[in-house]
Each structure stands twice: as structure tokens, then as C-alpha cells.
Image (tube, rainbow, N blue to C red; front, side, top):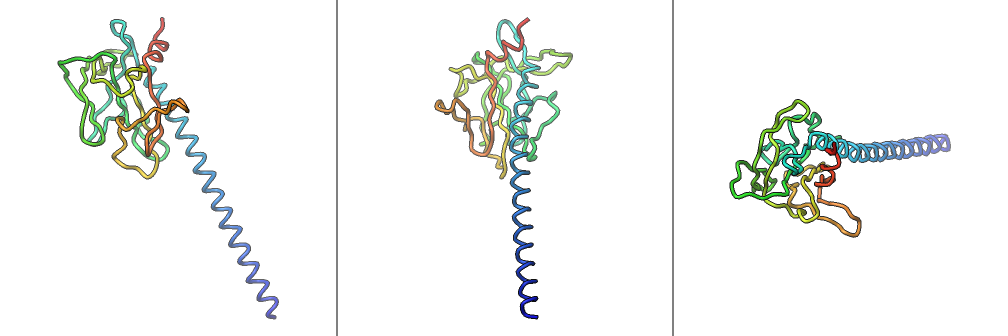
Length: 194
């Protein structure tokens, strides 16, 4: 009788451990799937923004986007504003040209902002503001005209375009708490070749 009871307890323990390991494996696969989806959605968002880029007086320009209370977000015509984890995309458009008479700004996560000048432009039957001049960004010398950040969990409001760094060894842009894509002047020009 004791042997049967011991065998039953051992069987329950083995089933419990196996079930827990199976659950952990499913959670790991789910997280890996969401991570891959995060990368794919970020690239799709970049392509959507590029589709609405244009050339104005031989200068590549991008849509302005929307100032939120904590940071700047995607342009109005980009439908998916949040990533697979539910985080809102951070978007910082720039211009290769500076100005001294700015008409607007782009809000950053730390409460600061950088200056921009907007102009209403119609692209693909949608009229919206485009950045035609701006303060310079940390990557102007390599032609970066926009930074897009897809935040990862846990979400913090401190994810900011000014915190993005370039790793020359891996040829990638990085920020704590998110994945980064950039849009360059040459990409805008390539998309808008006629």
C-alpha cells in the first residue's frame, strides 16, 4: 500500500514538473515569436513612413508626426501606432537643413524638445505637415533623417531619440528599452526616384 502511494506521489510530481516545463517552453516560444514580430512590424512602419516621404526642392523630407504628452509619435496616416507588446512607437523626424526661424518642435521623453519648421505637403492624396528644417541630430553627418523606436517591456517614458547610439562594430543603432530603425536621406531619395 505504501509503495502504491509513493508511486502515485512520484507520478504526480513528474507530471507536475513536466507540465511546468512545457508551460515554460510555450512562454519562451511566445516571447520569441513576439520578438520576431516586433522586428517585422518596426520594418513595416519604416516602409510606411518612407512611402509618404517626398523630395521638395531637391531636399528629401519626411512627415512631421504627432507630439504626445511624453514624446513624439508616428504621422497621422500610419495606422498601427503600437507594437506587438502594446508600446507606442517613438518617432523623431529631422531635416538635413537647419534654420533660425522655427515654427514648431518635436517633444522628447525628458520634457525637452528640438525645433523644426513644417510645411503642409500633399503626398498620395494626404496633406500633412512635413519637416523642412530642424535642429541637427546626433547622426546628421551620416544622413539620418528619422529615428523610429519600438519600445520593449517593461515600458518607460524615458525612451528618447536623443539616447540612441550608433555601434560602428555591428553597424546598428541601439537604445535601452527598445529596438531602433533609422531613415536616411539616401533611402528617401531612392524611394522617390522617378
